Image 1 (cartoon, helix red, strand yellow):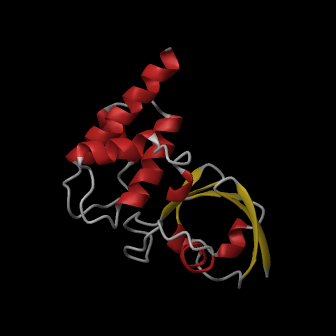
Image 2: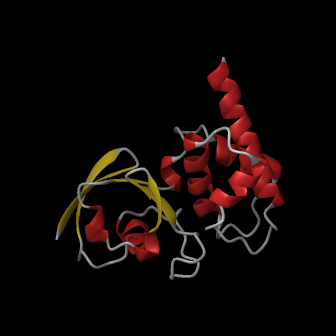
Length: 158
């Protein structure tokens, strides 16, 4: 099947069985290896991408479902060499360790602060709850996302 989709702001066209997982097509065919596979069952959030403005686990999406749609991966967060606020904060706060969960958390957190920049820390924890990290204990991740949200709010007030 010929599939056309906007991937990270660029229209892409490729051939694939419509039943292949979006995760596999992103990593293997499109060479967007930032998206990671954790559990392969939609439980951990490591493979989170944004499809038409909504976070989804790419391990659960058949690639045929993205035909004509928009997909944003972790590679689509940065603006060239300038990291997204969330990526920058995760680095500054040390909110990463082994790195398996980091791309999914970054994508989900970017979505969260773009939609709800004034979210409380409790709300941030709730919105990030679909992303499992086995290394950090979440405190540094929440600190980083809260900081990124505050910086975004401060810029919008200027």
